[in-house]
Length: 99
Image 1 (cartoon, rainbow, N blue to C red):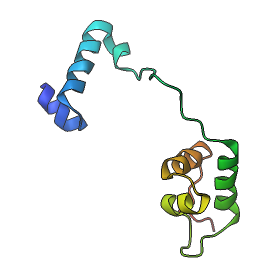
Image 2 (cartoon, rainbow, N blue to C red):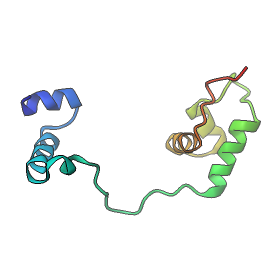
Image 3 (cartoon, rainbow, N blue to C red):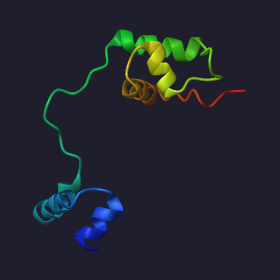
Image 4 (cartoon, one colour):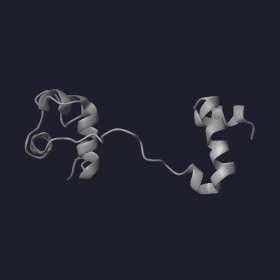
C-alpha cells in the first residue's frame, strides 16, 4: 500500500504513516508497538471512583431506564472520559440490563 492508502485506511496523517514506516525499517515489528508517552499518567481519585460505582450500581436515573456515560458524568460531577475509564476498569455495562 502507498502511504496515501494507509493514511486513508487508518484515518491518520501522512506524517504519522511515514513515522510508522521509518520505525518499521529501523526496528522491525517492535518499532510499531505502543510507546510510553511523556508526562504524568492521569489518575482518577478514589472518591470519584467510589461515587461513580455507587451511583451506577445502587441508583437509577430519574430521566432514563439506565445510566448513559453523559448522564452519569452529570450526576457524579465528573467528565465523560472518567466515567468510561471507571466502567471499563470494572467491566460495567449499565446499558445491558440483567433479567
